[in-house]
Image (cartoon, rainbow, N blue to C red; front, top):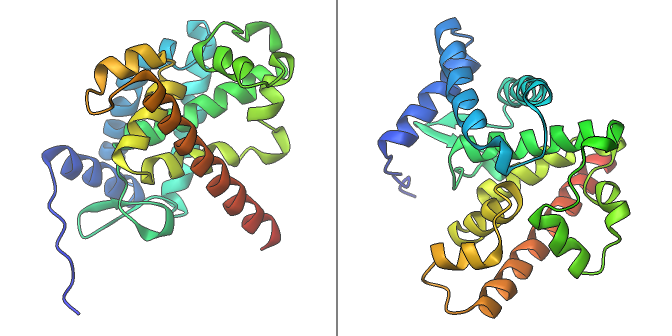
Length: 220
């Protein structure tokens, strides 16, 4: 069977070079990848979580270490110039989306022990209340310290989802955008109700996939 040829954009080529250089422990590339992630992090972290600069700096360091470890154990790797992830499939998003998924769960890990910095008015938490989840148990619903790897699993799954689901969940959970704002940025979706239905379907797929993978890891 002929091998499928995947065409790469300049961004994909750059990210593949960074991941591959990190895996090969090239010192200069390690610094370059850190700067690449850090620049994006500092430009976007206030839309991902509620934290002061000192806490954010700690989360950045912890997230980058976790990202590095994922590269070391080949949870994310390069094959034929393409960044690959779960189930040996190409990432459907930038490695920056993957990285910020890890950062969000490092934040939730921090909040678990420092509940005073929790922001109950964020958009995803408002929607969580609307969907019938007790806001006082929000952190327990999304993060369990005994299951810290779930954040990396979720980030990996989102990076592999369809472009539409990837975009919706990234904007909703990582960028904390309201559905109205997401709808304006996604003209292919006809209405608010259609977007909400699609978001719920994507979320259901995410939850089922994350639960299945996590249970499989526990039973391994």
